[in-house]
Image 1 (cartoon, rainbow over the protein chains, first blue to last red):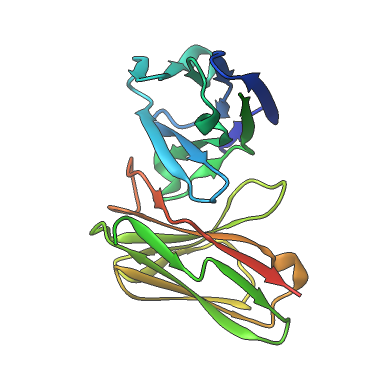
Image 2 (spheres, rainbow over the protein chains, first blue to last red):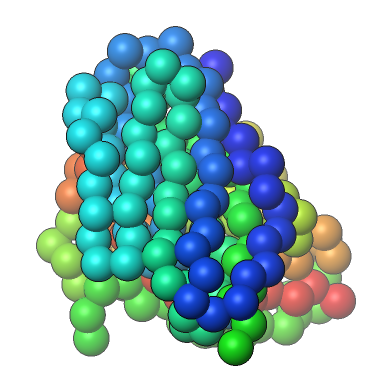
Length: 115
Length: 114
């Protein structure tokens, strides 16, 4: 069975603060893929990153960075110097190679960045 | 148009109505998906199509009827819905239905069933 847990339901920060969104996953497959999506109030899920299970290298893209640790089954997402436009719901998702197209989402973290 | 588009963006219908949601992808992908997002619940996969063929039906009630006439278009026909079917319905597409392929989502249709 596959499962994604985002324990933080809501996070509120002040602009320019750094914030980390946690994601813990469960899978029995050795090959799997992890994703982060952003959902602004408009509703569309915006793809941010994909990671496969064989690539534990951390990634940085501008103010965004991701820390993938297989030892703790975590794939955490950090926003540096947050901005009001970062306010959204962020979803972590898992896809197992043996599950075909099934993408399992966490329940999401509502991030509010206040000016 | 680019990416994945969905129409209408908002829909209000009675329980006896029949309506259809439309999704179109402009990415040249082969797989398309319908998801349901209810308040306080994780996204739920409803249907998967690959090369116009349905490959997955996640135990969705028959009052939801999908149609995929070609790889670029996906419809969700709705009839005799219940108030608990009110949700955001998201369409997505990916290059193929298996493996590492990233799914790209449309803006969704917010459905309210009265």
